[in-house]
Image 1 (spheres, rainbow, N blue to C red):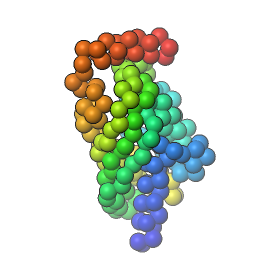
Image 2 (image 1 turned 120 degrees about the horizontal axis):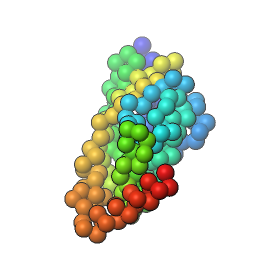
Image 3 (image 1 turned 60 degrees about the vertical axis):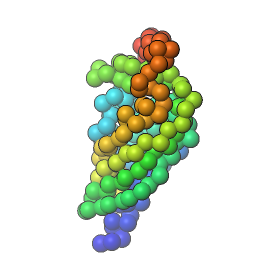
Image 4 (image 1 turned 180 degrees about the vertical axis):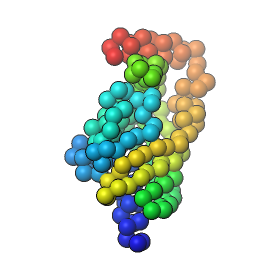
Length: 172
């Protein structure tokens, strides 16, 4: 039984890590065709579906805004098919980060600040047949926003956000 938990834990850990560096092939190998990401509400429409393509779209969305993404794994707990990871995500904000409304339209854009961040996250992963089938997370978004200068924004950054949001809506 320990071996099953170890395998599930390894799959969960790698599924978080591939968001920063995984290939489409790795997503296909590790993400179940019916997998759902319960955290995709603010993501682009391509990331809101199921399976490897949706998870890869989430990764592409993150990679467009952040480089040097990595997840430091602090704790791993598993119970049956459920694995919980306590992590710190590290990255550098180098591109515009766009969040989307319920209809999949750009709602807000945060232009690059060039700043690095480290934000704690907890990832909940359900594993089935050796692949991720369900994911949800708790993230310290306020801590990340504060480190990146999004909150509280300076007047100059507010103006940059308005311009970036208009551009994202026009291009989106």
